Image 1 (cartoon, rainbow, N blue to C red):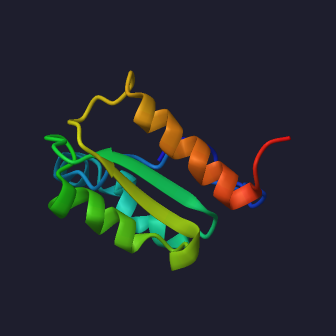
Image 2: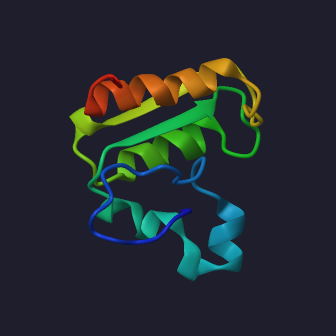
Length: 107
């Protein structure tokens, strides 16, 4: 999870792409599954359907289900891409749409 743990966050910006067996084996204290149930703020996960690092079924969906955020306040947006979505306009648009739905459109 990237970011700081503070009680006044309105939304979680980055949480990771999914669960990672390599992290669990090498650094069990960093296992994200131990922390995400405590997350209660709105969350959007934007992932690639063909992500080979965080596979959809085995990693992304599991992480999403573990989130402590109520169902109506979390979204999993799966794009028709692989792992690298940095230049994908749909990636950015998914975040912007989520922010508009969560906090209202910008003025």
